[in-house]
Image (cartoon, rainbow, N blue to C red):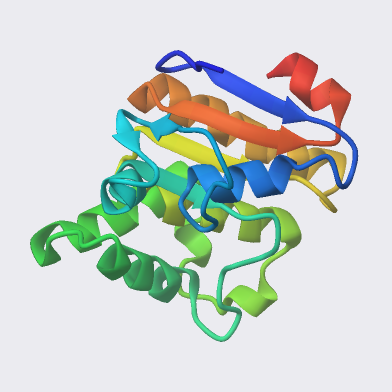
Length: 178
């Protein structure tokens, strides 16, 4: 399997097919049982740190901390991605604005809708402008309007940064459209 730079590639299949397991191997959270893989030019076994620096990941389950504000969640992510202190606030403001969250950045995430949380998680994953963005079931449980907003932002990221997108989804209409 080879995914071209800037491409959107979908892994489709029913529950239990191995989509999330494959993703976890590609982002270095699980060791592969056999075979080889490179992500953004880095070997997932020999260069896991390099893989992690080159990717952004939005997991299947909500990962934003509801006890923090959106801005605080982004600050935490910026530190985890080792963004230089001088660049952090600018990247945070850019992420909030691009995801349409600038006006709610100082609200507690537990007050956000599901779609707002997903957009915040996209902002977190994109703070460091990764080469590859990995989205594991990013719209599960969202209403059609929120799903549309998430995909609009994902398309925008691809257009803005040329980001390669690897996603899993159960929704054939989404996969077809993307």
